[in-house]
Image (cartoon, rainbow, N blue to C red; front, side, top):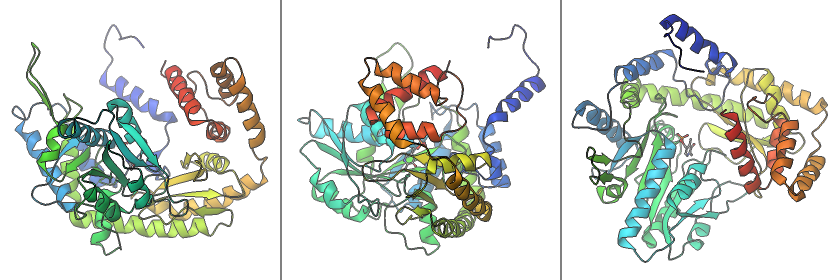
Length: 476
Ligand SMILES: *Cc1c(COP(=O)(O)O)cnc(C)c1O
């Protein structure tokens, strides 16, 4: 668009914005199993009002907006306490899990620069199940990711494999509680002991699960210790905007002490401009996400969170049992909380996701790796818990539909990919392949099965380039 010569009315603008949502997935239906964490109407309303009340305040300068300092330290302390840190534990609010992870890696890198200046190429050890945000941090911060395979039955990393990967350049160990893909918790206590033995920092990625798991523990569920009670754990990330049910734009990065956190903070007085001190990546930032997080914690309280977690876990138990009862499907590993993935030995799960999509359900496809089959992921939230029976009913029916469908010919797709890989201009060849699958230009795809099939078969590096090019075109 161009900026209109004369401004539109508020009604016109709001109507236009609402119309843009027409093609979005209807997350309010509770049929979208990722991206939106819905705490129900009343808590969402309180969060929204709190957010708007701090929309314009700027977190850049706590001396000008002491209210934001108060909101941030309150929320951080509440989550540090939930994750059983002591009085020395500290943290910051960030814009999301990715920023929290980025900062944990930066703190580790900069601590090593000071204390171990002989390390020219720092390394961090990542289970194959670690979130892609660590790879992004590695890429941005020039830390080398050292990937460790996982146990293909439990989908957890083995602590001894983490230890074997340690070199004199290692600056950080990483594990998840739980990982996103299969929802299982890595052996945090064992890895913590290894971190201590080798005097290494150890980050636990509790972005998605740190808060939910803590309330499960309080409800009496058997949850292995994954938080600051594990003495080797030096930092933890936990997203308020996931199972904290806050508005998006809020995560917590926590450290065992200020001695580590200080390496996260950046200051600069070398310019003609104002003095800059930034604890996080963002500099100017709305107070909205801080206020939203503060509001939801206080509105729900311990009781509200425990009620939500109990409801979600009951729905999860039902859904996992129901999925496993479908002969063609099997849940992978033993999920620790309300997120899991399932695979099939006999039918194409990407086709299953498309069929479910026609009925308004959004279920995320995940690609195969040498140790994990292709699968579909479901994260259950308070908003989707009431749909457990309806989900299972549609899954059973869609399995039958996919069984009766023409299967996707994986072998001929692999053959096409090999031809494209060997062609003089592989990028152009993949572009054509993608276009034939409906994935090109600025149009959004509707059926994903064929596209997923192609991407699953592509070598990772080629797939990454392809996706970058696709987005480079999509945002016209
Ligand atoms: C979602 C997630 C992240 C990244 O969080 P964003 O808020 O999307 O940046 C990191 N780790 C895990 C385990 C996650 O589930």
